[in-house]
Length: 356
Ligand SMILES: *Cc1c(COP(=O)(O)O)cnc(C)c1O
Image (cartoon, rainbow, N blue to C red; front, top):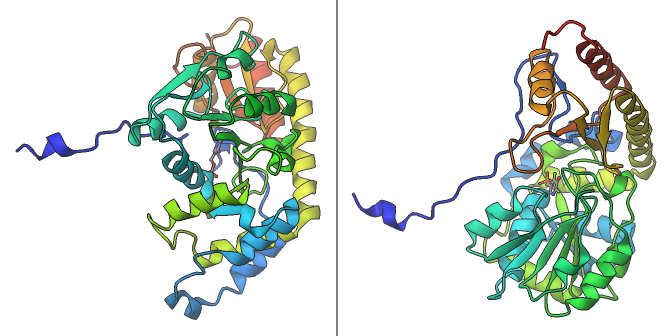
């Protein structure tokens, strides 16, 4: 019984809970509270099942072209995948092969260290400062690659594009990935810089601002050479990752820009309302430019609040991890959902229904 010595052992990424019960207010995985664009629904309803006997277009040309048009780049500068997790995993495999450790923040998307472990990539985490901001100097040291989300998750902190420009310029021998999963909620994208910096790769997703987490669509924008290498690895791994409906529905979503802007605008408005109300309740947080808030309470431990919320069918995210174990990450839902959350917290924190 010695086959186990040849097993690639990994400690998998732990995603937020997907509760099965009805009536749950789900603010724990940063999904969009609104449905996808109406055009997406029309595609779903007119789906031609006969076509499914054929393989999908492995280049997902329709979707690639729509994204290229939308972001004013050429189709050769666009790579699409099954959620940005797929795109990011391929990018780790493709670009992070040096001997030096790759760099990312100590508080960040918790898939990065999992991929690094899986692909045996050496890595070093760089501590954010006490305001959860990037310390630039940390990224001006020798490295095998850099990945930073902007805004960062789970902090919501947005860094200036100038910071990334400096990091890019200082690291011409490393690929620098900017994970822009939340950039549509108030950030400035690095996409306009892909011509200028041939070591820049920008990754975005349809899971948050485009309300399509269930469809699994993500993409990268970078210069042609970089995208070419990414495609070579992807086509050496699994050519037909994106299924036909995903390609069609993703395309439809990109084409409906007015709807996209409408739901993003609503979420931003609700976020600003929620900030104000939570502040009044004794919460503090970095000024999030994403679709979530990362909050800590002046008096009550985060874990207690987390459990009390859960008992009352409001799910938020809590990590028992160094530096963030007194914080909660709360996704911005609809106005109504946030009103319910705030009403519960008012009651709970001011000696209401829950004893503590
Ligand atoms: C949600 C998220 C992703 C992955 O999203 P997909 O659903 O796989 O597209 C990637 N990076 C960050 C920082 C995220 O929050």
